[in-house]
Length: 107
Image (cartoon, rainbow, N blue to C red):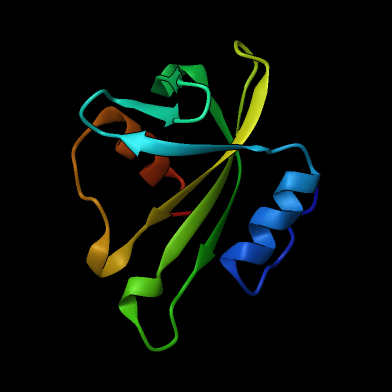
């Protein structure tokens, strides 16, 4: 699948939803997992793959620097989205979950 380019985080998330990435995940660094608060689904770093990611750089505010990850879990038969800050306000925790996500930041 060819990677698209998006102007905003919202635009990327809307399009990814249309592609089946419908679950919103948050990073829980203390538990080393991603969690969907709506369903209480937790994914360890080994439970998901990063299918796509999109980087957004704030033109005037470093706090606007975000990465949107499209993830999938064959084990749990689901697709979802993780949004994470980078740059000045990034979570620099040394957890396994953050390390897995950060692997893709450098590409």
